[in-house]
Length: 147
Image (cartoon, rainbow, N blue to C red; front, side):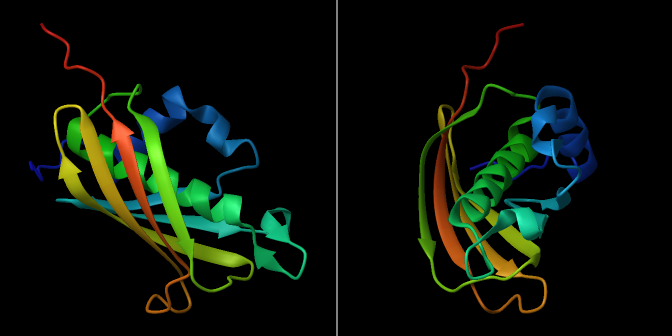
C-alpha cells in the first residue's frame, strides 16, 4: 500500500468545498485537521441539531463523520477523485457522546487500484482514549484515467 500523501488537509478541504459543498449546509461543522501517511484526523462540532432524545449525538451524525473521514484519508492518498464512493460501512457504537467536538482518526488498512479499506475511531475531544464508535469503510475507486 502506498502511504504517500498527495494532498494536504487544506487541499482536501478545498477540493471538498468545490465538489461536495452540501456538507456545509449547516455551516462549517467539519474540519480536516491533518492528513499524514496512512491516516487522517477530522473534527466535527456536534450541536443541538445533532442530538437524539436524551441528549446523545445521533448515530447518523457519527456515521457521517466516519464516512467523511474515510473519504478524506483516501483523497489525501489518491488525489482529486471525486467519484470514489462508499461501497460498505459498518459501525459499532460503544458509548454515548453529548454535544461538543467529536474527533475521528481514520487509518488506511488497504489502498488498492479499485478498493480502499479504512478503519475509523471516533472519540470526543475531552477524552480521546474513550472510544465512542469504531467504523470500517470500504470505498470503490474509479479507474485511473489514461493521459
